Amino acid sequence: MSSTIINPQPAIGTVPDWLDPTPWLDTNYTAADVRHALGSETPDESTLAALLSPAAEPFLEAMAARAQAITRRHFGRTIQLYIPLYLSSYCSGGCAYCGFAADRRTERHALGFDAVEKELVAIKAMGFEELLLLTGERSSHADLNYLRECVERSARHFHNITIEVFPMAADEYRVLAEAGCTGVTLYQETYDPEIYDEMHRWGPKKNFDARLDAPSRALAGGLRFAGLGALLGLADPRSDMLALYRHARHLQKTHWKSGLSLSFPRIRTEQGGFVPTHPVDEKMLAQIIFAFRICLPDVPLNLSTRESAAFRDGIAGLGVNKMSIASKTTVGGYSDGGSDEGQFDISDSRGLKPFCDMLRSKNLEPVYKNWDAAYRSVA
Amino acid sequence: MKLATENLKLGGHEFSSRLILGTGKFSDTETMIRAIEASGTELVTVALRRFNREKPDDDLCAPLAKLKNVRLMPNTSGAMNANEAVRAAQLGRELSGSPFVKVEIHPNPHHLMPDAIETYAAAKELAADGFIVLPYIPADPVLAKKLEDAGCAAVMPLGAAIGSGGGLSTADMIKLIIRDSNIPVIVDAGLRAPSEAARAMEMGCDACLVNSAIAAAGDPAAMARAFALGVETGAAARRAGLMPKSEVAVASSPLTSFLS
Image 1 (tube, helix red, strand yellow):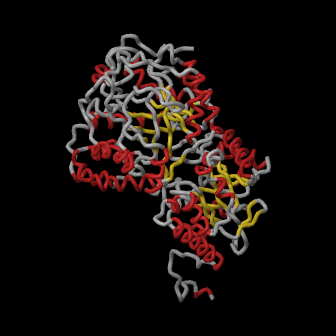
Image 2 (cartoon, chains in turn orange, purple; image 1 turned 90 degrees about the horizontal axis):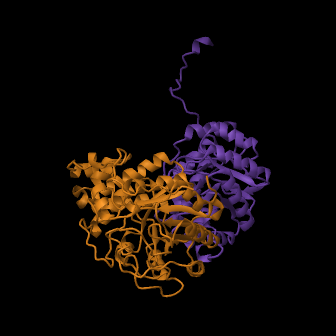
Image 3 (cartoon, each protein chain N blue to C red; image 1 turned 90 degrees about the vertical axis):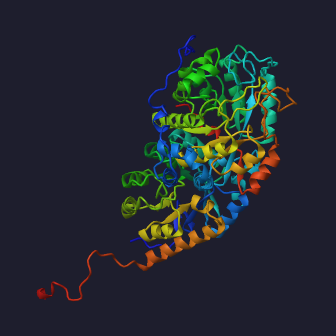
């Protein structure tokens, strides 16, 4: 089996035409453009660019109303729940912004299979049916065989297993699909190749092109869902968000049977003390989420516990239709207290019950199971 | 012309209500139940992926099964091909005890358009296996006849995309399906307003299946009642016999009087 997608010394990445956001970045959008975008029946790059522009800031309330109406129509009054399980904090990567980067002096752990079982039982007892398994970059502690075993074990407990791990070759993704994995989350971090090169200081992740192509390989390998995103704070958010939109549209056209979802992670404080050069405040984050809901009405939008309880309460149902809760970003931690050092700090540290009570108070139903193991065949 | 004075007949079962409800997208189970009760429906469809026996407060099947005078019809939403749909249907029958199945296969999880080829294969196999099969299909008159020949109890062409509120955008094709069908024709998906349900019934549909328009309404129970009235009104108008439409005025002194 080939896992040689890695070029040891890649050049700075390239932005293919289908991804390039620059044609939509030069325009000075006006209030009239924003009004036109808000009423658009066939949203495209121009619509998104107008809604992301400073001219749209005074229209935030109108954007929220439209985003809520679209979300309600497509996803109903529901919020789908999922939970992450960090399997390993070993990492060969050198991401400048990450608490698990190889040069961080954090204590490393990887769950043995018995420990994995304990975590699965504890998470299942909480009621979740969608589990996201995470690792760092490929390492001897967390390689394909390890992941396959973890997916197989998880698939015995849960209906829906997805992964957020190192990029792989298509035939490696197929191994995981056959083990019961349905989807992959893989953020490009930034679509700006120069900033990408600067942020990813060494290791296989330095290869921009290989990462960019990974969701496509995962879908070709038989996974059914791909989650995309860019880490907000690394580069110009408008540029990255336009590229994210174009990436999603490209995958919709090239993998027509696949489901996409998008996330909007903002950089959080971590042990290394990285300070984002392009900080995105909550208003901008909300503007981004509303703009994506309007431009991609039928694509699920996720929001994790990186964001504050107040922000999450406000945005639930206003564009976002899928959320994690009661999450640990430490390795394991559900069956016992876990360690102190997580990948990033959680902002919304509420338990499951208060979160679900909040959703219900907003007339939103928390949905635990929205998939079935009957739909696990690999194409 | 079909007269809707009789009950709706599906696979040997009779229903006095001609409104079928979907059960997704509601804000909570109580709201869903209130809407079902207000609608007077006797048949509801529920996705196998929302069955959750291990967590009763997340399960849609058990609370629906408790309702008197309401039959359950599991659906295979989430299935990407015929094999998955058949497996899901069997599991749904086992868990719900219902012989009804709504075959729903949409390989693209974004626009949710039904796959005619896979739907036909699954429907044929499930009908042969004794299920009462109601396939959700594109509004395709040829496919509808093939599904009738394959043993389906009804066909359920879409009015517009699921959850779109696009109304009866396929009206002309649905009319062709109705004209030649020997099994009930049920409009499924797309309806936004009770007036559209009335129009579907006036056109000669045998029933309407509604979900989003009720679940996403300001007051779901009130909207469910309004849809029941829309369906009844349309059926009554159909029974009464609509005046034929004509593109030219009918002259009181016919041009052909010289012929007499």
